[in-house]
Amino acid sequence: MSTDDSPVLEVRNLEKHYPVTEGVLKREVGRVRAVDGISFDVHRGETVGIVGESGCGKSTAATSLLRLEDPTGGQVLFEGEDITEYSKAELKQFRRDAQMMFQDPSASFDPRMSVGESVAEPLVIHGLNDRGRRRRIVQDLFERVGLSADDVDRYPHEFSGGQKQRIALARALVLNPKLIVADEPTSALDVSIQSEILGLMSDVQEDFDLSIVFISHDMGVIREVCDRVAVMYLGEIVELAPTEELFGNPQHPYTRALLGSIPQPDPRQRGQGVRLTGDVPSPSNPPAGCRFHTRCPEIIQPEGYDFDQPVWRSVMDFRVRLRQGEIDLDAVRRFLGDEEAVENPDLVDDSEVEAAIREEFDIPERLSDSDAEAVLSEAFEWVVDGDFEAANDLLADEFETVCEREPPELAETDAGHPASCHLHSPADPVEPTASADD
Ligand SMILES: Nc1ncnc2c1ncn2[C@@H]1O[C@H](COP(=O)(O)OP(=O)(O)OP(=O)(O)O)[C@@H](O)[C@H]1O
Image (cartoon, rainbow, N blue to C red; front, side, top):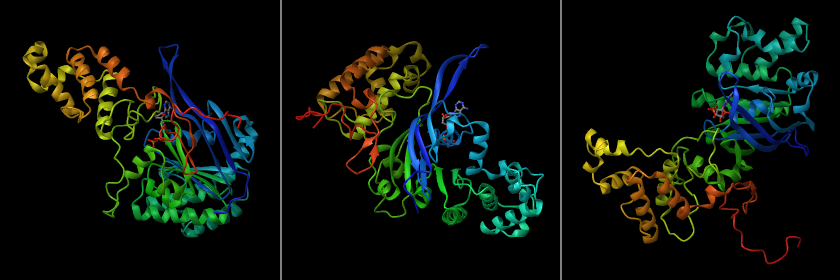
């Protein structure tokens, strides 16, 4: 990596919200917060990764920062200029300098055109009319990406997935860009081919002094190619660190969970980190407080109680489902008894219903903390009576955690890089003894 001081790309509070509309008049009834205020820099020659599960907003971040779709907020500075303010002509120049690579290269080739013509297309659009020169440039690039100069006359269907991604790289390079945004460029490829393409991208990056934004859901791939990594969850960056630091000393529970999901050949490393369960919630209605609190294995416990952490997570899973109105008593009764029990709840004992729900959520028959158990038992009484609101209110009062109450700031941690987690930024800090100005 060769970086100079000023970043090539500065992303500042970038936001892309999609309206959710209803009716013929398309009244806006909500917003999908696909990207919700992300900031990061990319320096010359640097590869910055964006990692996160499917639906976290990575692709939207890519297309918005290249203005392939217009952001709804924030700024993107390219070599110091705000591309969100660019005129059409300025955008055209920007499109030379910043290219995109996609997961599925097939989709971006016209089957009726030779791959050479496809790769040369951006040259035509940008006014290089000399056919012979175009051909020489493309042939040279083909060799550069590990294909033969003769391949330019062949058609897309004649190439394998890996070869097509090489051709896509040639096309991304043809205008001599400064920045490439690659969205899962190797996810559709076999592992061995993946490594070849990643190796090729690294070589090309050095030769062309390229900056790369590399998007992937795969921590293994990210580690192989990135200098720094932004971890994204539900539209936000939750941790940002140099790659080795992120892998060696992750500060956000989401990052730790992603790392825990990497297959580990070394048995000594196995079992480190907790596997993530459930899906990313909808960005049209993100959870309050920390967006990760509905799934976080390390969610902070409420004051005054002492849970085993996995049990606390189970209790929170139950609370989240209760809050969302997703506890189905009829289904539980049907499971325990038969159809008649739905019509006549007395046929199934309340304690059986409670036990079944506890089992479903992995909550022990009795919590080891008797105070917590008293609260939970009372809540279950409301639940089996069908008064979910009362159960919800009681649990919200007694078991509320800072993680659901307040959104954490993305702030510097002791590890020397930022993460947004209340484990690092307690919401109720100890009263400072000195004045803030000191
Ligand atoms: N045009 C759109 N209109 C409404 N919602 C959208 C639109 N495009 C994306 N979304 C939503 O925004 C969220 C983020 O999607 P995005 O594709 O950016 O995520 P991702 O992390 O790249 O996931 P994937 O790897 O599956 O593409 C998703 O919930 C998606 O459904």
